[in-house]
Image (cartoon, rainbow, N blue to C red; front, top):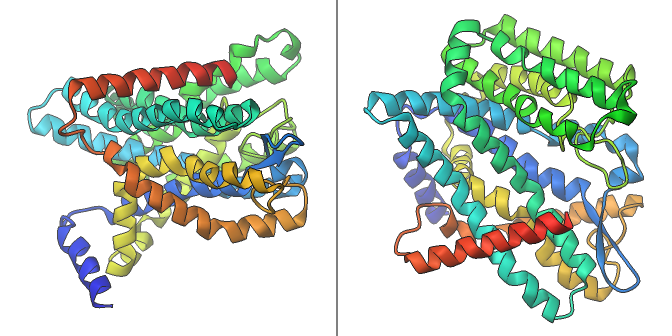
Length: 403
């Protein structure tokens, strides 16, 4: 008990007096939703030859789709990211640094962990193949590892737009975010309307930037212009109405995550449901800022929040590897309930819930081993960095070929 109190006191003492704890709390909440969503709404089917394929309980129990509305909190993640980037860029300019220097630092922080996980998996794939792991399983693993990493590329792109986001926020306020819904709606109209059969498959990719930039721009507006109670209520009401209309009038898929076998998906690439949900989540997040800040004034709640924020990219990059670390050896024992058994029975849901503490512990162990990829790589020679880069490129090519 004394050690715990000492650790809490250490974190408390290391926290700057002006730290916005509520912002870190919102980021931690959004971050936790990523592994929780992937672990609860994703599973495997074990084939007769022992190979694993992706599956989801949503394929059988579509009434569980509303769970994805709360487990997909990327709107909050982008909201906090926009707020933090606007604040960081302002401080950078006050110190006399250039925008290029600021952007380079931000992108390096995003890129190092991605480079690390890609390099490790590039080395693992041939070893696993030599050990007899079926090719189908390796392709499934590649999909799961790459699945969270698309977010990093999109986040890097919107971060690069921060100077222009600031100008738009100062001039147009919240409307600089709302207007981003228009191109998303136009692309959706072509993809899902009377012209759907003639629409090229790549058309949805045009939604990647405006669809995810909405939440980020909202965060920039929050920092630069503020969002009062009326604005938050408008976001919640407007986003909620749009969300409901799209579901019940235009037959958008109810799930916010992709379901194997379904042709349409709301997140990859984003549909109009993404900014609609981000508006609701963003409005609620801003309203929760004050009470959340009061809660996180308690050291027992603040310490894990601070630690989680320091390991944000590690959690994002490695949580699917934690699932695979259990599922790949588990496949040798047959259809393990909640792990390699098909997610098509009520028992699977209960069994997966029972696996959650094990998954968390596995991620903690992986995090301790891989957190070195997150801070600057000190003491690493050019040859090792070049090797890591080459391995990362090799895994990217492999993933591109099989995804």
